[in-house]
Length: 181
Image (tube, rainbow, N blue to C red; front, side, top):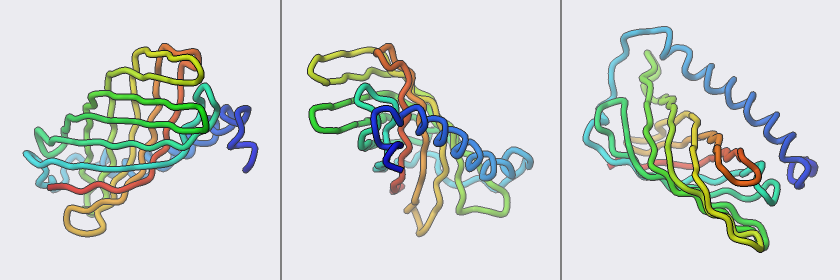
């Protein structure tokens, strides 16, 4: 496990995190894709705010602590738009990414508490690692929200962040919660 948290372990972390997440997402989203009809959730017109944290792998400083805040406005029961703020910290390393996201949430038949989603966005990333660098950011990913109480969700999201920085791709695997109002 210590190897996964070192600078050289970021490639190992990417090789483990991406396949594990894709398996999780395919298991959760499989029923939603197989069935054409599902009772839609009543999300249209609602706002959701969330917080997540977890490993951010493949940064210029290796694997660091990742933190993210997001807001979603549901323009329909499945489609949401909103900001995503990603932060990465480690000693003298700081990463700040801000993007606008488009998110699609699936309805899972016979599983109204499960809400798999995919998302993509466009923004910028700034890294301070003894020399400042700012470039474009394209976060692409997906995850699953599990409703544990009315309008309260626990979630996990994997973001594959494509940038123009020296390390052109970094991953952010987030675990957190979301509140819908």
